[in-house]
Image 1 (tube, rainbow over the protein chains, first blue to last red):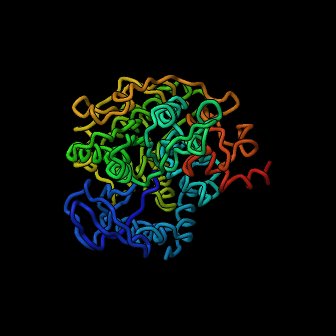
Image 2 (cartoon, rainbow over the protein chains, first blue to last red):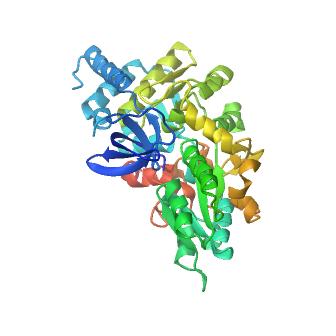
Image 3 (cartoon, one colour):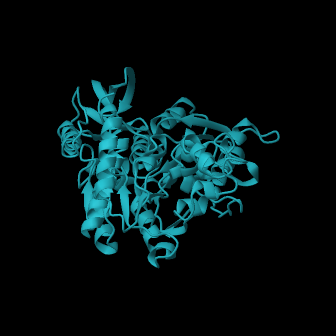
Length: 78
Length: 381
């Protein structure tokens, strides 16, 4: 039950609700626990609630770290 | 899917594995506990243990909320549904957890003698609230379990129920706290006295940490000298966290590092924390399956919201119930034993017919090993 996933917010609705895209499937979730979410943002979805906003810059940094590691190990991770 | 597939790339996993193998010293062993059912699941599903050198051992901790819920609490929930005639709403994972007398919520739903419990599976606490609004003539109890990720959604519906003036909605609160369980493991004689469980470092929970932040783990690094790396749930996240822990241990450091910076900050989700503090307070003690009574390790509903507390409304009395003697869930949850060390594993205890809680949820150590790892045992046995 802790298996939360990143989903993209595609529409803001009344009452702290939003429509999100889950791998092509549209679903209504609650934004009651997070502030300042805009359409296009990614959030971590858990039991119907967004529990945190996903930071795309930090995600890119982590992926860059993997790429760097690949270069230093003499392999391309891509 | 974006932010998922990039963190599952097999070629990159092998690159990180090669770095781990290059940096892990051959003259020492590394005992790393992952304290999160999601990590347990990822490790088994992607066979991450197979990518690691033999001297790095991953130990599954008590990080699955279904697995740590004691039998007595499930009995309480069944009693509420059978004896009090409420609609009991709960997450699907709770339905098959074995209770006393061979019962489970699912079996109670199917019928016991001429009694049938009205148990409804919900995906979200909001669904439980909706049940109460749709059934004003019935009492609806939300059987709330889980760590710091599921607690804020429970707080949301309690506040909403008050605003709506709902007189037929209560919550049977069983929310537990991650840091308390980690402290309990570190204080256990098996670990503290360098006994049966050597424990060098922790992979910190992913989604729990999105809510509580990385700050609560600083205590473990400072007081116990155990490095913690908070990791995301995808396989590359877990591999990277292991590499970071190997580096810390090699360098003699014990710090909190954050691999999951795309969703975890030091402060966490302050809005969620404030809401939880508004609705809940600490229990002096709470029984965990496998860990016995753990002081200040769980939450109850504050007196301010007593009208929405099922324990108060229905006078729920907790009674501790011993686990099945042959079941090793307790030892597995403390990292003392592995699933294959239990003689019930894969014989009478399977995901279809679980005897113990670790076999119930896909995040349980036994269920994850049964689904993804048991064939390897058969070959090497």
